[in-house]
Structures are given as structure tokens and as C-alpha cells.
Amino acid sequence: SHADYGFDAKFGIRDYRGGGRSSGRETVSRVIAGAVAKKILNELNIDVCAYTYSIGNVEIDRDNMDLSLVGKNATSMPDAKADELAVKEIEKAREESDSLGGVCECIIKGLPAGIGEPVFDKLDARLSYALMGIGAVKAVEIGDGIKVSYTKGSKNNDPFVIKDGVISKEKNSSGGITGGISDGSDVILKAYFKPTPSIAREQKTVDKYGNETVINIKGRHDPVVVSRACVVVEAMAAVTVLDLMFSNMHSKLQNIKDFYS
Image 1: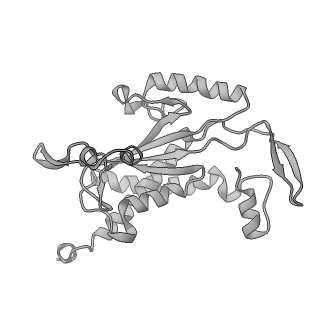
Image 2: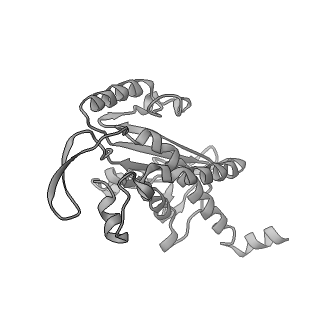
Image 3: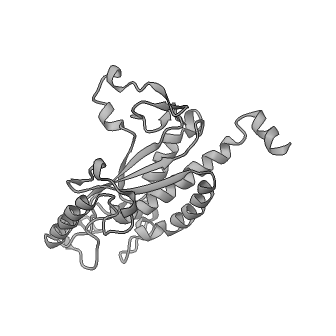
């Protein structure tokens, strides 16, 4: 499940001493860019917050969510009880020389309606592209995307309503994006992370000569990556949204007139 073979097939060389561009260390530059993007978004009263939604079979309870816990515990879960259970699951996996997958959820609040471009630069497409570029992410979900694929239109349709004098969605099952363009509701997305492939167990593989063999990886490897990766998800979401907001500045002639008049 490592990236070694793909890199070797493409470049004809690989460095067995580390993951190189498939390593989590590659994301530091993204986090730096995300910090700048978040500063600008905050000036526009737009907030981007990512946290651990689940680790293994342990999932947060939305009724117990406390976002002030994010970044203050070992799992980045906004639920004290779920954090406690997840820590036990992580320790169990560590003792068994195994690893766990997890899900990171990201919520973008305050994004105005109208952000995103039709067809090729849809907001959900660009966000998915950005998150899928993070190592270990194997799936991205917008709103209730997976669940609604099993339901009917009569159940999934989400009426527009007026809340506090503002046009809003009744359920926001689409995650704040319709037709690839933001609708003013909270943008909600999830990134699904695979379990860390580096585990201290004997595993089957082949060598560079095509012979079947086994490996037993040594060294320090995290049993779960999602809790550390949430800050990367947050950064990529912030950069993507800000980029599309800049693009939106010339979507109408009036916008250009307002800027230069």
C-alpha cells in the first residue's frame, strides 16, 4: 500500500529511506499557505474548521460536539467521550502492531452564495481535487453525498427557506453547494483516510527483481494519521475557497466597475 512502486515505475528510482513526496512532511508548505488564506478569509468573516470525525469504529456524537476541544486533545475530536474511546482504540492498535483509518470533517462557515465556477471549476470539484491530493486520502464526501445515493428524490430534496431574513436550506444535505456553486449555507465536507500502511508486522511483497518475499518494517510510525492531517485538510480548503473567491471578483461587469470606480 506504499507509494514506492508507483514512484519507481514513473521515475526509475526511489529512496527507500523515506516517503519523499508521498510523505506527510510534504504538506508543511500547504499548511503555511493555508494559514495565510485563513487570515484573509477571517477578514471576510469566513471561518474554516477541520476536526477528526471518526477513528476506526469510534465516531463523534454531534450532540456532544465542542469545537473548543479541537487541537487540545490527542485525537482532534470535538467530543470528549469519543476522544477517550478513540485513544483506547489507538493504543490497542499499537499493541497489536496495527493501524487505523479515520475521517476528517471540515466546515466552512460564512461563505457567501455564488462562489464556484460552472462545469470544470465547480466548488465541490475543486475542493475534492485539493483534498484528494493529500496523502492517504482515499475518498471525499460533500454534505450527505454517500447517504443520499441510497435514498429517493422526495426524501433528498432540500427546500430553500427563510431563516432570520436570510435564504437558507432546510436540511443542507448538499453540504452548502448546489450546481457546483455555494448557496450560502455551511459548506460541509469529509476526507476519508486509509490506515497507515507502515505496521510492524510481517507482510508479503516482491523485490525489484520480481521475487516474492516478506518485509517487516522497523522504526517509528503513527498508528493513525487522520488526527494530524486535519490541519492539512483545513489549509487546503481555505486555499481553494480563497482562490475561487478571487476568480469570482470578475464574474460580473458590475464587480469590475465597483473595484475600479
